[in-house]
Image 1 (tube, each protein chain N blue to C red):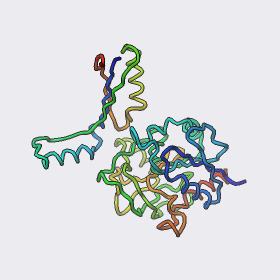
Image 2: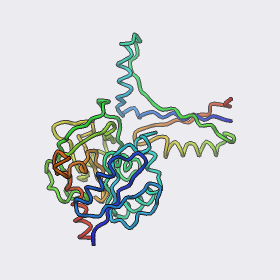
Image 3: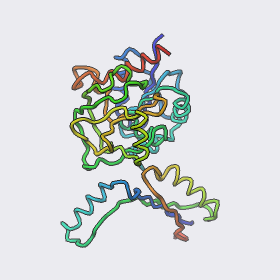
Image 4: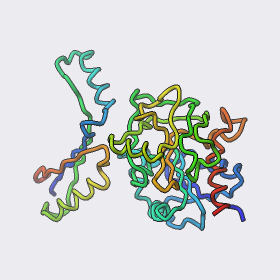
Length: 84
Length: 225
C-alpha cells in the first residue's frame, strides 16, 4: 500500500499559543537555543490503490475541504513511498 | 400557531436541553433534531447548541459540519431561516462557511468559565431584535477554543457592515480579535455567539435572565413573518 502524508500547519499570521507554551517549556527542560515553535498536525493516509494523479487530486480535495480549515491553516500533500 | 424552534443534538452536544428549555421559556415549541436525520420536521428556526460534538476531534465543529442534518440547515439558512450557533454551534457555523473566520485555542491556553459582560452591538438580527443597540448583558461563558480570528479585511468588513453582534466588555476572556463575542451573516438570519444566553434565562440557575432575549427575538421575528 502507498502512503500519502498531509501536513497541516496554522498560517504564519495566526497566533499558536500551544507552540508558544512548548517553546517556553523547552529552556526549563535544558533545551536551549530554540527561538520559536509552531505546532501542527500530520495525517498519514494509506491508499488502497496506486498513487496516481487522480488519487492525489482527491486527497488534495479532502485536505482542502476537511483535513485543514483553510481560513486559518495551510496544508501540504506528499507521497511517502511504499508503506511496508 | 406556536413557532417551532429546532435544537440539534450531535454526539457530544451538552447544552441541547438548556437550549430547548430557553426556547420553551421564550414561548416557542422546542423540537429535538437528530444529527443523522436530514429532515428538519417543519421547524421555523434552528439552534446549534454548545458542547463537544465528536469530541472536538480534528477541529471543533469540523466533523459535525458534514452531518446529514447540516446539509439541510445550510441550504435553509441560505434561504433565510434563522439559525443561532452557540459556542460549539458557532464553531460549526464557521466550519460550514455560513459565517466567516474561525475559532481557535484561547490565548491563555486555559478553559475559561465565567459570567461575562457583553455589549449587544447589533440589535437588528433575527436573534437580537429584543435588545437595544449598546445594551449591556451578563451571561455565562465557557470555552477552551473561543478565540475568534479572521484576517484584517474580513474584520474590517464585519465592522463596516455592522455584523459584529456582541463584544466582550471588561475582560477579553479568550483573546478574540477586536473583542468579538458574536457575529452575523450579511442577511442577519445566521448568528454565531461564543457565550451562552441559554444558561441565563431563569433566576434559579443563571447569573441573570438577560440571555432570554435571543430566544424571544426570534419568536417575534417568526410571528411577524
